[in-house]
Image 1 (cartoon, rainbow, N blue to C red):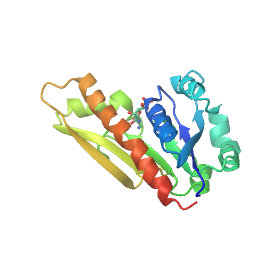
Image 2: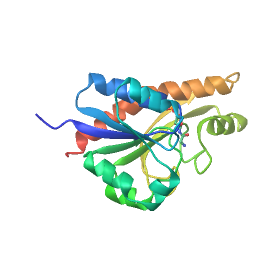
Image 3: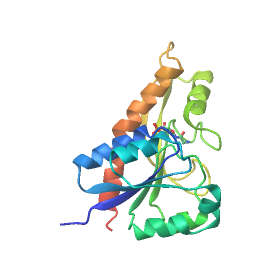
Image 4: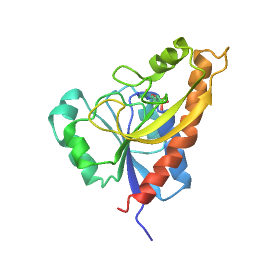
Length: 194
Ligand code: GAR
């Protein structure tokens, strides 16, 4: 039998994507969420992790950017794939080098449009709405040293109707994220050969 692949999730907020990923791999035993990391001690994602008895680690800027502690932690846990799910800090070089092409992110728009520093969550949806776009979507991509610019793995689109408000646009994006992120992660860990 092949080894169960191990996923680490970084999240700063509510963690609805993290939750979907946890649930997905409770059903599909090819992979498991081994740890959830957050830069915010009050992030709701940590409560979700506790509810599923998943270990958590909270860190600050000093630990993330000036030490190798997170890299060592992930290596000790034998992590196969690092998944960003609503995590907003740039990934430091030591982590990128330790997990080449094994760190992915989800973004709630069709990159390269509406990406970059400060473009997250409702800032993205509002920019899409204000620009009068008739469609938007989600992007799953590899992470590199520049915000939202790594190679694209998968995109899904949705239509924006003339009377769609911010809530509707957010809802449509979230539905697509929840549907596709766990599925794409499963494909990636299946192909990682580790
Ligand atoms: C998601 O919509 C994700 O695409 C977005 O944060 C949300 C997190 O929601 N990420 C970004 O905007 C990154 N630039 P969640 O905490 O409910 O999973």
